[in-house]
Image 1 (spheres, helix red, strand yellow):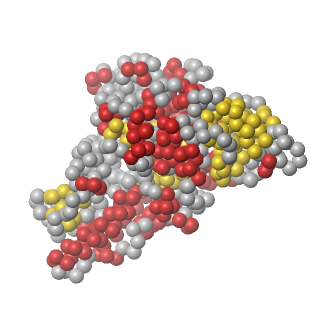
Image 2: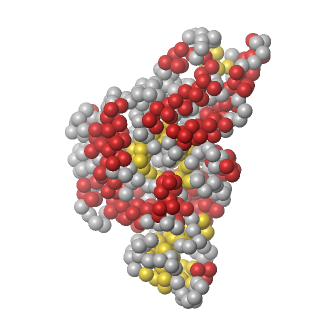
Image 3: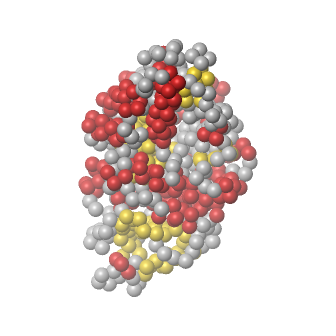
Length: 574
């Protein structure tokens, strides 16, 4: 495959980097990161090998949910800057070859949003149907609550109007009624607005909830209609809950043919395929592989590659224009909800045995390096595995240097600590005193004194240098984003050997999840036509040779190798 063939679907071979502006770099010393600070760090991201920045919410917000409670979808929170500052960031990023995507929060708003304030004025307010209301008392919905430590139900009573409104998340985040055509039109306008300012796409938050809300709104509207005897509501006209995703993708790609939607869809595989648009591939362009991530941690806990291999093989076939986003950490809790109770307890025992390390009874509030006890062999093996998996690697800020977490931080804030640039008391994030920072720096052994960008950039053997090498190598191997996956047979349960092939070339990755060394023999006879095949060793350099169609790979404990077969071309430069 030629590199030029991949350029029009850039998301299939991108390196995505998620960051929160308010915790990335503070340029004016007020203790809060800002857009000017981000602009100053764009060259750092380019040097690392990032090709796409994902910005967490920067919209005006009461900040009851770290910006995910939006009060104005068309604005920029004055704490981080202005719309003009954002445009400068986007322009400078594009100049450096970086694309920029941002969160599109179409499931809910803040209860301080003008739309919701209007909707609760009266039951016949024009904005009433912009949210999901019911007039009858709701059943017990405690099992559907996303944050069981904060909420007891997904319906809350509005005392003024005497009706209940839907909120899958916090009660201060009422769900929008996507069944309402006016709401769908407004969501498209929001997307169109940011596309006009240069945004290259969207990470779409909580996708299943707003699709499911269509059905909930129709049912609530029907029940209210029967109670009122008014014959029905306009939400009955909705044809399909998924039609909104199809329409939104079509709209976004009319405005910008290379813009994407990257969806948060933590569902079983069969339903994930629906959110890609099935055979048509006309809904989400990309989707996070939550199942693969959770099975990865189970495999790491057991030092057994089979759960991860099974999850990879069970991925449903997707349209050629679609892609999986792979990750080991994101900005939320590290959810383990798709594991069985027994499997989840195994991961808890290995990586989060203390109650303060766990959250919502389903996940962990930790980063990878502390979970692996800071063992550089395991940390590097895990990230080597991430970059070699078929899909698009997605990093959370600070992963490139091995940042840890602040377990004293409430909920998800544990992993949203300030970026660690230097070894100073604030990690070079801000000139403000620690007490004024938006969040305190990571404490103890993973704090700025021990983990920071400056020291690692000067050390050729640092994790930062390794991550940069991984990003560059991944980018030179389009097979990892475009190729067909094969899990190669071999007898060691601790080892995952997989191949991503386009037919004319392939990358073979071999990872030892166990502490004991292993020697693996791989059958590559399908590549042998006239004599044996020579493979490029992509990470260590040099070449290796098959013998009678087989290849012997020696792995240290937690060792890894990337090998590339390209019979017709230069082995060293893919």
